Length: 608
Image (cartoon, rainbow, N blue to C red; front, side, top):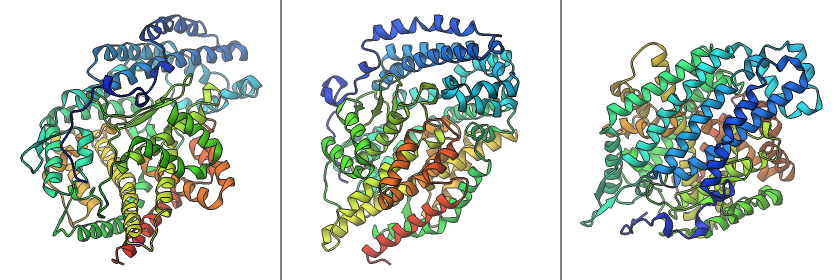
């Protein structure tokens, strides 16, 4: 895409109200937030009153669980509001302070409730199982069943309380990176090729990755990664500390290593991580074939990573308005039926979305929300096709939350392992809708379909291959720490550079500055999260095609999946929806779809 002269970014106050989320749906005023904050200490005291009493009978246990939920619910509302206000403009100290204060209370609450898990785990198993059969315990059955499973990793009350006090330290590492990334780091500017300058932000960088001028693409990649490299020693020390914290918490809970601890929480087999990486390695030949097609279509003697984001098909320069994006997403998601579309309309029309990029606003996009209100979406919408797919993606998260929140609060959250599935289903449905609308009897139709296939292949590459590369990076980094070896800027960059060579293959040039890419990935501060993008994509492909091919029966299973929350273990919830991720088949099926789509693109381009 071509970049016009850069208009100054509008301040938040200049953005029309309909494009700003309405966080007043959580708390009408900051003062209401402050008033609720004052209730947390009494709620903690009410929970403490049940200490050493849980064996008195099922009524006492039930009351303790309810009081703990009441505390957790209010803290979640408080934290979400403060954090999302902070994300509107990370330079506003008031919301930094509010976030810090509620974070501190969150860990105080963890200390106050630290007795619950060890005391429940200490109850005779036959007694606990009998109590679980009481009707009032229905919302707590899965939680209690899981607690029985986790008994070997539950510490004493004193140990749990001590461990919870270290929570703010680990959280502080994440917050330090967030503030650095969104406030302190200055990306600088590059020449626009016409005697002017382009001031870089992460959103602008996202657009420049698709710029037709190769010199501008190369300059943008070089400048952004150099900006991180200038703080490389500091960022390396920060990430190394995060890795050591992951290991310390895992060992404290008697897990073999940090990966075992991460997988245990969702009752996942240890093989799932290694088998994903192995399956993606097996698909390397197809990826190399795609990258070579890209090089040839771009008429390049060699391919650099900064050449891998630009669409290989020329399309008319077109800005997509936010309203156009909303309407297209609605049409694309029509196969999900009227129940889903009704919830979608609430989302699009109720000021649940913060649309525009403004100074100090958190980069990227996410979905978040509260049980008492509803989900929200943060965007930095700039009018590209990718922005429209981001809208569909985040709405998938939000409506997963929306349907899950119809369950009782103890079950009203879905496991992280399932978190990326609904979002990717939306993207697959949207791209299939757009491709079906293309008329292959015309040059324009073939061109547009080729463009969309390229987009789909890129989403696949970035979600499966790239995220698995990230997953392998953090696994190797954690393994290095677990062997007692140091994590330095040199070793981290060395690990990452080797992976770039492996995943991109021998025919892609790896520029030296790309070794610093790891340092700009915020997800690395949430250990062993990114692999779930790849497994989620694989599951989503299976679900989306079953919806398109089967119709209402598959839609019904999918809506039940969205509403399942945490009522069972994630692999069981997925099996009920028709996907078995304990086998390699979903990942292998996704690889077959990548190969099929690549063949279709090659056919349209006359390259088969």
